[in-house]
Image 1 (cartoon, rainbow, N blue to C red):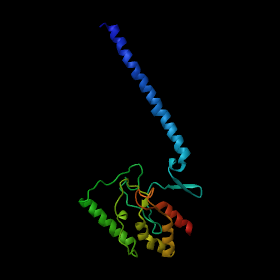
Image 2: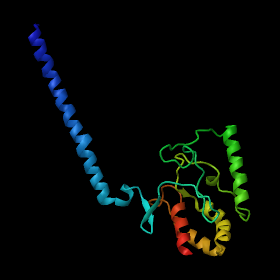
Image 3: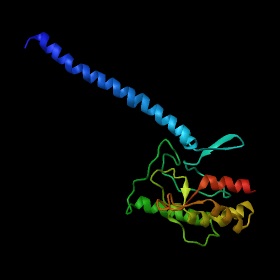
Image 4: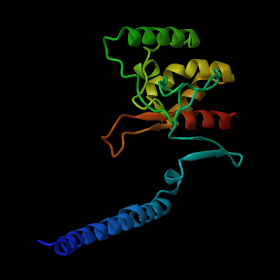
Length: 198
């Protein structure tokens, strides 16, 4: 086979590959993202824009990203192992196994700190208050974790325990579709509701 025939044969195979590459770039690199972005903005605008919560017209946080609450008048979320804590750019778990001495020590420290911060709590300590989540930025806690902290929050806010428990009860989200996951309480929404209750 001469050189010209080989060149023609090569070009005949390369051209469809180049065209296929260009077409797939346009479809999956441009059209698909534009359509998905448009649909998400149309159907789920709040979620598509980060589930941002504003107070007084000023964005303060996102309902899908956990954060550190230091004041005793606020409910605390799950401990975080993401970056330096609650870092959405460095999500992840500790990857420590159940026999890890480091994990056992961290859990014991978390239990001691939780007991010290909540001296009036009488319920058993919920595990989600002393263990990190897989993402490290879990925005939710179990209803049990919220009720465990209720005496501290009520005392710090000078509210009755029943009033704080009523706010918690109003913010318990059920299982999704009735069977997925567990009941949960969004910590940000709960704390903002308590601020509004005052």
